[in-house]
Length: 248
Image (cartoon, rainbow, N blue to C red; front, side, top):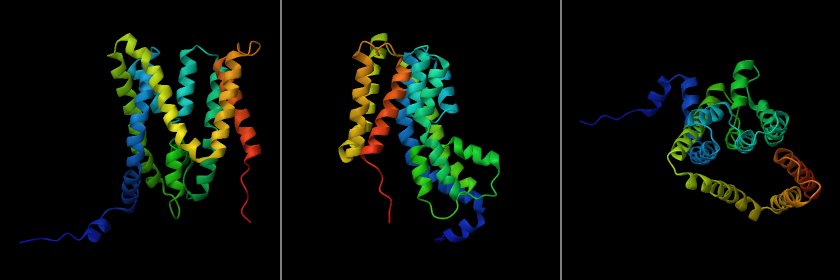
């Protein structure tokens, strides 16, 4: 004797907040898998610089900032000044202010400040994209579900990458630096090939970085301030050359 399951009836028995959370988890699964593999590279870099897997994982658990985390950790390993580290991370992560401001228009205004702060902590480029495509108001449960797997994937990948690096020989650890640069190139090239604005911005940033590396009078500037200058100048020039046209 066969029994049929009424999926609608089962779904109706599940509280709405739980449904929202599970829907967010489902949509966050691809992001979590992607973050897991990218964060392995971060864990390798941190371990190659002398950080323990536990410390590397703590950095990823308290930061979910991708490029800012890579740059900030690199400056920490180079014993850069705290002001230099703060400014570099601020410049690289300033886009999250705009993302959070945009999503605030779609969040229930009755939501408490603590809940809003938890959501803001987990905002990344990919999470913002998925959330911005949602129709209607964004619930706290949906956003937490959307953030859950990316957060776990980022932290777990970091620890695994750092732990694996500790088992490698010093020669292979030194070679990880090349693999890290290759990963960034692989992330940038597709966007540069499809967008003239991105290609121009990338070219300007490379030229400015080379100037800080080879011109005698300015090559003594620390890498943190060089990153800040290259990012701001390249972004300003690209914004001037490729302004976003307002829809009439």
